[in-house]
Length: 217
Image 1 (cartoon, rainbow, N blue to C red):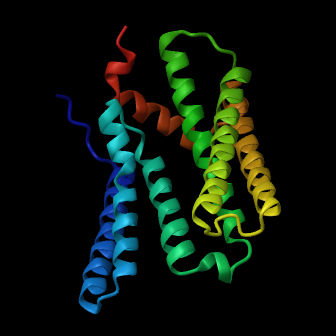
Image 2: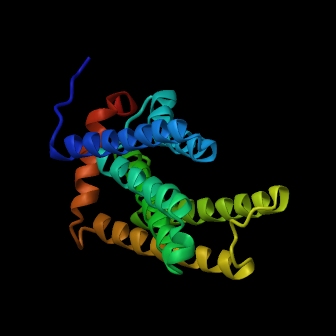
């Protein structure tokens, strides 16, 4: 088996994940000692969510570049820990908009890297426009599915994920669409060799290095 040497980003991602999970474990211990079972359940839930990217990678036998793992871990922290537990959604009116913008950026970037690398290595010959269109479409589709999920949770369990109803839903979709449009446009210009995007270049290289079986001729 080929061992990939950890670079600075890999080490940073490892420490970010480790420190965040350690914080959650400490939170679980404190919650048990104080008998705060609601907080205990929340910390366990967030801890399990942090392992989802690794579980997906293991199940489907591929690895995403650690730049994206850092972004995903940051999203989990800002949405579940700060947003829900620390109630940033109530304190800052723009917190939900910020998170949906971040989510659109992450999903569009992941979609772009995946289809671009597979397209270039397997000679599918999709045009730069269609590669960019795919990354845009997958991000918008993911955002729409998430809004359906929020509506379902509110309707079935009487919670308040859609804080302002239709207004909240539309703003979430708008910011996700705009962030996806930005990333897909950058991706299109990158493929046309009109700009250099270090994130795309580095992620492409790492994705190929860490997933050689996907690119065997």
